[in-house]
Length: 283
View 1 (tube, one colour):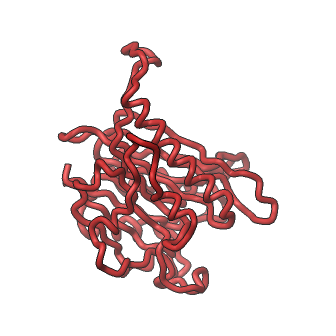
View 2 (cartoon, rainbow, N blue to C red):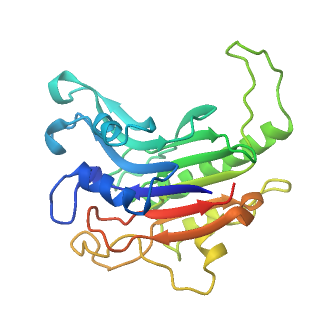
């Protein structure tokens, strides 16, 4: 079995206003050690977030048995003590990846809204039954135009990987041109910042071209007759005036969905404005 936890941790800021990464770690480990931990909204050297701490380094100390791979959505000067100001997504893994890729997602001009750069980190994770692609992402909230564009790019990345897998290039081992397969099987998780009734959700799960495995919402595969557990707005009613609802998901390629065992949401913790979601796979 392989377990993945995904959580927008709001740089460790709980509904009580306290920034506490140790509390985040305790909540993640409450049901045991996941194989992969995919976090969104991780901060480095921002004076406004926890006195400019390096949260990647702090989380690595809290999870010493994991490798960490940080994908910065942006990388700017002016950080705490002269460091780089970075904000983005972090993957902690107990399975050393074969390859790691960081993809900047598109942000088409939308002059009437505030927005920030977004990205997704892709890891090729080996298992005893074969490797799969694990992607961790966080999409734009304030611009539907950008959110839709980012969904489209994720679909293109999936299509690109599948075509490369079936039409591989030349291989020059032990050089930068060494071929590393990007498997057709994929899991993508994170805070997608779209709701179940949105155009973005519909596009994410719409059919892909022939021979490209479609993407399925893991919750619907495992719990088709159950009401969906909310992933934000459970405790924080100031930011989420529309109340509890879902913005965080696991999507899997069609050739991987038979290996889903469980999907669940921890609706008890108020350590962030979002709730952690957990996926178990039989691999």
